[in-house]
Every structure is written in structure tokens, then in C-alpha cells.
Length: 531
Image 1 (tube, rainbow, N blue to C red):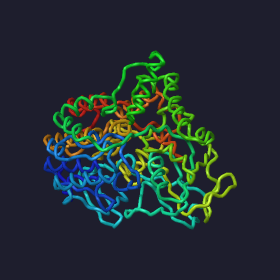
Image 2 (spheres, rainbow, N blue to C red):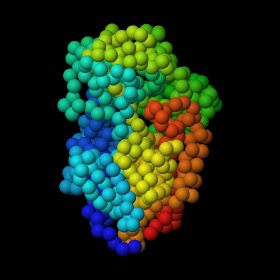
Image 3 (cartoon, rainbow, N blue to C red):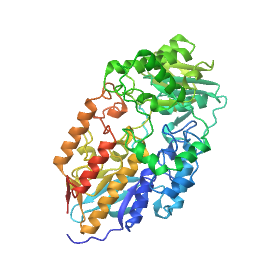
Image 4 (tube, one colour):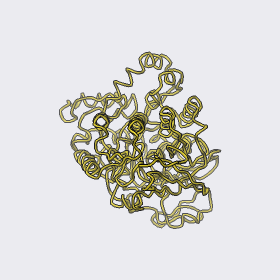
């Protein structure tokens, strides 16, 4: 194949955790690369999700890069669970520390990406009309970055302010004296509602499905704890990186069905008091056995009933689905906030919102007047941002058509028919079922090492093979079906988006995924066609 001159060796889409580290690795390979980012600054998810209360649910010392020891040592986290503001500050520090900003083009939204088969390169067109060409196109656009705005009748008729947690105003918003409606009780709704309640005159929460949420017990990070971890940061990362979720979750190899009731209760009480998602690791079979699951589920419901004073509200807030089949959230005073006289819950109970009118929201014929509507309605997860880029591969096939019946990838990093297109934490990689930052670093390192291999071998094209993709899709589905994660409709299955195919979108288990990627690379990128 003759060499084709392109503007760049690689175009990276997105300047969040994935894009920044990808650009750093590309620099180290000596490749000419550029990030195109639709936002006005770095941060990805943490740029857009700047709502009050936005906070990570992985502890700060783990939700951070491990690729550079000096970076690990010099950055000092202030809280156990970092706010979005602090994470954004960290990512800007990383960007400047590694001189990445020079190769980032902001306010650059991708509207199409077309593969040239004859030359084995990609042409990317931006919203401005600018075009760029590159041998490799790497999406680091994020798995929770395409905000979902539900199409409720009359939405555009509302006379007040309309906000979305996934696209928050850069200058914030003053809720003082306002009547606020919050639609959605997933992670962002659970985080933002108590903060809004501190300012607003009235808060009405519209809930479709109650969520399980565990107290975060956030607090300033003890300098002594931080110093102790940093004394052996590498060892700390290695120990927890081999755990199923790539984080310190204190997994306990005990069944909820065989643990004596008093022992089980004590364990759950201790984890509830400590706070954090390690509550779900109290037993080894919560997501494998529905009877075991009920032990944890009923414990959480008891805590809700003990916290929320109004019995009807407590009952409505008590989830009916299995614990963990939808994302388990972390909160700060979420349930207790419902005890305040100016906060109320409207339980949609599957009935939905009738319509939105200029003065508010109509449910079952009743109008709930409000001045502001906050949509905390999540994302078109895993695939949304990819499908919005107008990607076309071999033969002009669109990615949307290829994935019409559900996403299909090999290792979550490539999809057959789209050579030289890579995805960082793409569909069917562990992504949301892990600590996202180690998952990102794993995929970036795999992609960068692959590009280095191609460079050394004088090759110009790599594409997932159909057989390898079929086997991987089957494997991911089989693993999911062996658990309880598929037992309810969730965004893990795309169920929050009308018309989206119901396909489980993540690989469950991080260490075995890492082992598979290592094996594939060691075999000369087995399952890929290289030219």
C-alpha cells in the first residue's frame, strides 16, 4: 500500500480523561495528533456535568491517573469523593503539565467521519465546515456524555427556565426563591436535588423508578491517609487494579444466604456507616442469586423507612427492582431532604408525565406549577456520542446501520467494517462496570501499543475480524445473562432511550478483560486484520 499524506496521524475526539491520556501516549509515539473537542475546555463529563452536588462515586485517590508517578505524588485531593469542580481542576493541571493544550481544538463538534478505503484514512468534518484527515480516528467521547432530553409533549411551551444536569450553565444558576421541578432520580437527580433544596422555595421531584442509593459519608481527606497510600501508590494501584471493579471495594467472599443473620446485619450496618459503593461487595452473590439479593435490598428499604418520616413518601422511594440491576448511587442527605416541608415527591409509578404546559408539569390531570424544570434524565449511554458523529466505514456503511440491532465490537475497541477506528471504553468493554479511570488507561495503552506495533511493522490499517467480533459479542452477552444485571430495564441495556435496541452494553469483570487484551496483543493482535 502506498503512503497517503494526511493532515494528521491521529484525530482524537474528546478532551476528557480518555482523550487527554490518549494524546499523551500519541505524543510519546512521535505521532502527529490532535484532539477535537466540542466544549470550550477540557474535562469531558466533568465539563458538562457541573451541576450543584456533582461528585464522583469512586474515591479520589483511585479516580485519577496512575500512568505517571510524579503526577500521583504531586496532586493533593481535598475530599474523599472529589467534586466535579476539583476533578476539572485536576484535568486542567494534567493538560498543562504534559503540554497537551497545544494540540487540542476546542469548540470543534464532529458532524461526520468518513473512511477512505483506497487510502486507508479518515476524513473528519466539523460543525464549522473545517475538514481534517488522519490515518487513525480515536473516539474518546465518553460513555456518559450524550445528554438524554426526553421528548415530553409540550416541553418547548414551558414559560420558565429549562436546565439539564448533563449540560449545565457555565455560570451556574440561582435557585433562590424559585419553585423547582426535578425530573429524574438517577445519580444526577439524587446529587442535585438536596443542593437545590438548600436554595429553592419549593422542590418537586418527579420519579419514574426509585433508585437504590447509599450514603457517601463524604469528608475531607485525612492527610495521613493520603500520605500512607502515596508511600506505596504503585503497590496500592496494583492490588486493587486486579479486583473486579478495579477499585478498593473490600470484596467479601461470603454468601448472603449462608452468613448468619446477625453477622450479615452487622456487616451491612458497618458498610452503611462507612458509606460508599463497597456496600454492594458485602456478599459475593448479590448479583448472582435473587434470594441473596433480597437481603441487601430489604436492608436498604429499611433504612429508607427509618429516614423518611412520611410513610407514603418512604414507600414510594423504596425500590421494587433487585438491588444493583440499575446503577446504585451515592448520596449526601438525599432521603433526609424529603423531610423538609418545601420538598415533595410525585411518584409517576409507570404512568409518566402527561405533558408540560407554560406554567408547569401535568401528571394525572394535575398541574404542578414551577418556575424552573431541571431534567436529570441521564444519557444515551455507551453509544449515543458515537452514533451522533455521522461515522461511515467501508462501503459507506454508517455506524448507526451497523449497530441498528445493537452495538457490536471486538474488545470494545473496534468494530468490523470500520478500519482504523478505535474506541476508548467503547460498548462491550468494562467501562461503567469498573472504576472508569483504570478502564480508560487500559484501553488507551492497548490502542497506543497497537499503533506502535503498526508503526514498527510498516502497516497502515487494522480492522476487527467478523469472527472475533461475533465471539466477543456472544461472550459479553453470556456473562451478563449469568448475572442479575439483566433482570430489569436500565440504561445498561439502553432501556432509557425509546427505540434503542435492548443489548447489554458492558463487559462485566475487569481483570479477565485485561488478561484477554494482553493475550490478543501477545499474539500479534489476534482477531484483527492488519495490512
